[in-house]
Amino acid sequence: MKNPLKIFISRDAMWGDELAVRIGAEARDGKIAVMQPAEFLVTEEPIETRPAFRFTRDDAQRFMDELWNVGIRPSEGTGSAGQLAATQAHLRDMQKLVFEVLKP
Image (tube, rainbow, N blue to C red; front, side, top):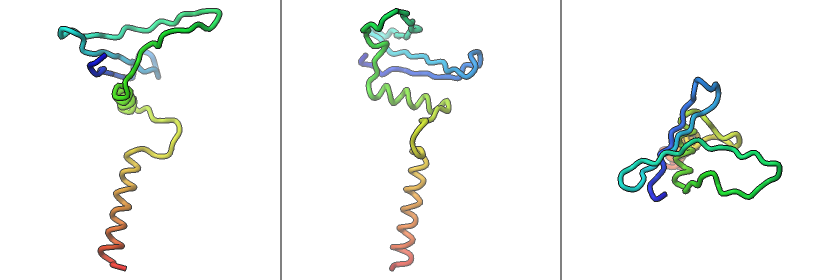
């Protein structure tokens, strides 16, 4: 799709800890495209299939941002972008203190 996906994720109290994901986009002629629930195909043997859906990098970023908004964080890694920004700001403050105020 040429138009960016609209991604909405919410915690659905009805389903306990599960998240409800809704995806839509603008379609041609001003209409709206809405993704319907996916279905699983049960087979005895693995089969080759088409992707369930495709994301652009920007769509994937919007998806990640929505997950973040409902409290989902990466299971691995150290710190977050906010923590890194705070650390960088602190480092700038310390550099200013050392090189401008104390003047070694």
